[in-house]
Every structure is written in C-alpha cells, then in structure tokens.
Figure 1 (cartoon, rainbow, N blue to C red):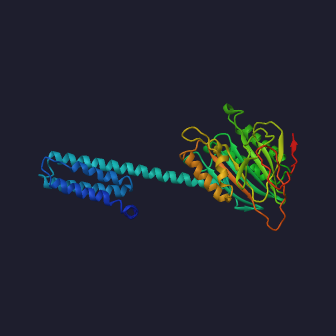
Figure 2 (figure 1 turned 180 degrees about the vertical axis):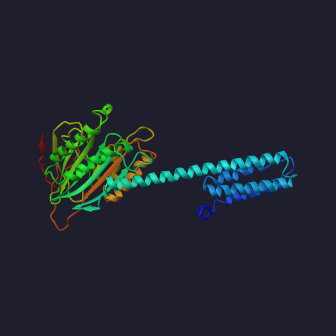
Length: 398
C-alpha cells in the first residue's frame, strides 16, 4: 500500500508539472555533456545541484528526490569520464550533491505540509462562515441582495464583521455590524449577535425595541465572558434596517454604526443618521427610529468601517462615495464585484480590518404607480425634478 501511494505521489506531480520538468532534465544533460568535454581542470559537476533546487519550487518531494537521484547519476558519469569515482574531488562532489538534494526534498516536504494545513484551515473557516454568516438570498421580498465579506486574517474567512437578513410580516429586516477587534478572536461575539438578531427580529414590532433586545443579549454575554482586563472595552456597532414591501421608505436604527449610502441613477449620497445611539454593549439606553425614502430602482449600500477606513500606501482612506457613484446603475452583484476589485487594488491586496458590504436594490414595480416622494433629511439629498418632497415621520424612543 505504501509503495502504491508513493508511486501515485510521483505520478500526480509529474502529470501536473511535466512541462516544467523539462528545465531540470535539460540542465542535467547540458551540464553533464559540457563537463565531459571540458578540460580536466574545469569542474561543472557541482552545478548539478541547481536541478533539484529548481524542481523543489514547483513539484513535490517525490519528484524532487527523483531529480536529485538523476543529478547524482550524472555526477557518477562525469566522475567515470574524469579519472574514476574514487578521487577525493569526485567523492566530495557526490557527497555534497547528495546532502543538498536531501535538504531540497526536506524543504519541499515542509512546504507541502504547510500548504495542506493552510488548505484545511481555510476549509474549516469556510464551513464556519456558512454556519455563522448564512448566505443571503439573491432575492427576498421586493429586494435584490448581494453581499461581500473580506477578512483581514489570511487564514480566516470570517472575523468581527457580521450581517444577516430575515423576512418579517410585510417587510425585510437587515442587520450589519462590527464587533470590536478582528479575526478569530471576535468570532464568538459576532456569533452571539447574529443568533440574537435571528431569534428576536420577529418578536419586536419596532427597530428600537429590537435594538434594546440586542443590547440586553450582548450585556449578558459580556457580564459572563468579558475578561477583567478588557472590562468596558468590548462592544459592537450595528445598523438595523427595515424595508416595507409596499411603502417606498426604509426605517433605520443606528447603534453607533456608519450610515449607509443611497445610490440613485448618477449619484451616491450618504443617508444621514440623525440620532445614532451608542454601540451595543455600552449599556446606555436611547434608540432612535429614522425614516428615509427608498424608492423602486434605488440601491441601499450598507458597509462596515473596514471599507471606509481601508488605507492605500500613502495612508489615504478608501473613497467609497466617490467610487460608488461610478456604479449606481449596476446590479447588486456587479456592484459588489466592482467594489471588491477596487478596494483590494486601493489597499494593494492587504486589508487592515475585516470588511463587509450589503447591497439592497428595490425592484421596480412597472404595473403599479410609483410614489413621487423623496425625503430630504440632509443637504446631501438632492430634490428630483418633477417630484414633491415627502416629509417622512421620524420617531424617537428613549
């Protein structure tokens, strides 16, 4: 069984890298021929070590060992043509080539083992992501949805950022949040907040009540599990959004989170959070319900601070509003693709913090009369020609 596995181990790399193997084989033949036809005082045999060294860069340990054996055989041939194998010079060259070939094989095996371990960790991280961050449906109610998650940790696919969406009577509720910290250390708190949202989102009629329930859950968790040295330093920001099926509005409660962007054809503006409450876990009451216009054809872009605080090599933040303006006519999936590519290009592929985004696009209803209304809660909103401004009600609960 062991021999069969060994032969299979040789066969698989050979099939995958047979074209690249031409390089070390040609080098072995070339060095051998040149050395044989060189004067006796010219020794090119030590250069044969380059063959297993090159092979180790793209092949497995078995193939690297095979190339090392061929290099040793070539060294033997060179020794026969240059006065015999028992000369001190050829014995030293053979021993050196053998040792260096073994070292190349060992390093190759270490690299292969590290690659397998990293693949296993990523597989576990992907499974954990699907358990904690349930994939959002492409369509839910009147919305088309797309999401994106970029983890700052190389070995992880999840961290302290989180999002969830659920269907309620007559609408859709969405949460996006950011637990203090990043990487695997923040997964426990993110899982708690996601579970609390999924459990309570259907039980409370208003977003402020839902925020209060989440605060209570986070407070209980921190009281039991927060380390003493981090007392008062663990918290989570969250943005709760409710989108009714029939009304062209969106209701929002912010717990210290960034306000979303409203994308309309040709422009992207920041939805103002008029009365943001403290983050969850701080223990301060007072959650506000803000109402804004969200009409068919509009897209609401929710994001975490890992997006807008991502820096380039000069230290400049990622200009989300400016970049999103270029893609206001894109579908949610295309919008995520554009932002992902542009964000990674801005940071040179290295994020300093986890980043999450959700795009919510309200589908047009061609067979129904559109509500000609637009809230103007901030200077960032521009009145659309031919429309009367809609005075949205705002409810403040303390």
